Length: 505
Image (cartoon, rainbow, N blue to C red):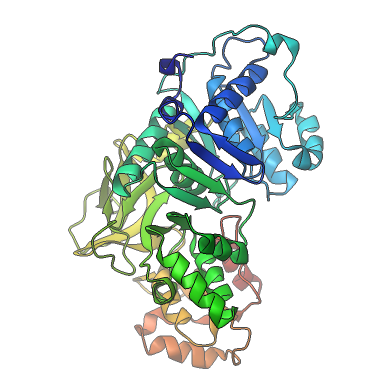
């Protein structure tokens, strides 16, 4: 097969031959194995066609060698890959399948039973990636289509906090730009071995973990699901050089470590200290978690900033000082600016909305031209996140619509208040939201989860605690004590649901 016909990532894979590419519960595949298996799957998907011509193909496959083979097979057949969340309920799958216009869905046999009723309603065939190809697909060695870099490659569905999820479309060129930026900034090499624990329907797990590893000739080891004990044990076995996770995962790893016997704590901490890089993203990293992880492992977690539509935009340095609460500077090939409400750049030290421009920025929202146009300002993507540029780098203040609360004429960062609340000895977790109010515009409200063995959380004392650290207008007016905060599949708190709890109370 001519490498010039392949997407950029697969053309790179040809350089790595028999190197170990993926380790997972379903086997160990070299780069050559992945190329052979994905070619066979591509021919099966084509079913005699010359090219899928950017038709969408969804896939419901757990983290595995089969997941990578399926993604590559869809690409090589000329299709656009649409990953489904394996933990999502059927209504979520139905929305993605219908919205994307998928012509087929590749499903692991263990998951196909729950998917079949949805697919039947939509008239979409469900394919088993391991089933033999039809005779027409096996016949001869018909060349696969040539895949130009500007072709659509992947659709990631956003979390949809303001409505039903939208499909963000990335081209092969977008993906290549995102990957090359991270490979350069974090100095990926063929000697790396990353442990993947993140869901593979999200840009964090797909691009930052799987794609960066396979671009570099490294080894990507995929766990079927996150399990704190299993992760610590895998660290202890040695050989892992990279680990990337969300703050919730680091919190759970810390909790498991603290409950372990002293001999295991020493073994785990020593093993983790040998990794060359540990990264946190997809949600704000509490400073308390960053400090505790550093105490345990010696690693100052590298925070970065990104989102579905842009990949990664900002990153703390690999070798220089990382300042808690900051996400560093623009990554290679990425332009970032802060603007006011009229789109004018703001001076350093002044909060503004983050706008991003570069070759990694997504192409469009699938089937939503109006929303795509509204998302850009003269070529710059409007992230909806607010930050301030300081001497130590960018500091994220929160979402323009969620984490920035306007109360009594003041703009308040919910994240700032959350950091203070998490320092309270009886608070395990929290979420601060703005709730509409006739007098104040929005009331600052805090939902808190108590420590399992903590004392009682008294609202008056909790407000006094915040008042000792922040200005009076930042003190929560209302407090709800909850057993757990509502979260999505990536572990992010769903703040509209938190605000709804206050409206019902």
